[in-house]
Image 1: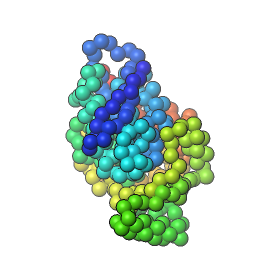
Image 2: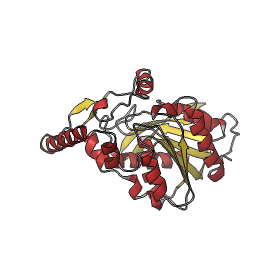
Image 3: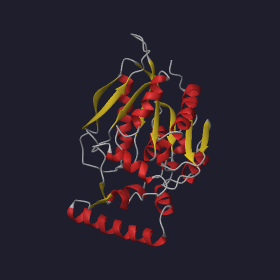
Image 4: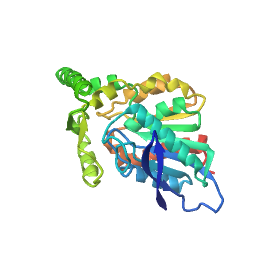
Length: 295
């Protein structure tokens, strides 16, 4: 069972869904987990599958749309990394007020760019007791550079510089095709395209300011602040969109307890489909069961 909820972050109303385990008894409190979507994702893309598995394991679960995404209020379709951090913190606050949730047992889970966001949140918010980062980004500049040929990279920097000046002089960023910033990988891009076609909230154009936002956000700078709270990193050795080096760098800089799980043979978007999805959730549940039991 799930129900829609609303809450506020920096004065904007955000929309989410609260998922309840079937075996929840009246008056009982469970551990709660906030799920965080990726670069241009929305709460109804992929995350309901995660919520279903976590519910079956006994957890209360919450999904939500960041400011300006899906049904949430705010400037449309911006990345705004630090604003997303504030949104996740607001979601943790809201989830902690739900009567069925034990406020001392709240974890966070993020996938792709959400995997970067949850690292930053975990580093600055001690209320978060357990973190899972899946195919996440550790250093925005290194990541964007690593997936481009030199000409593509210099062209992107030039476009970003021009757009930065335009935003300062005219107050608006130019919208471009999503694929111009988030380069599609041949390996699993069709999986992503198919999922997005079935979701009316998915967007295909985003502002060029995404480039500056990404180049300046480096969760590996703060990942060491999470310890002694536990963090799990999950990546794939064949991810060509967010190379496994991103999770490896995060893992190397994190304190204990920590774990790095490397899946074999899967592309970036393949982690949302079987059989990789079950491998991701098996590792996730093992981590939560160890450090954040549902009951």
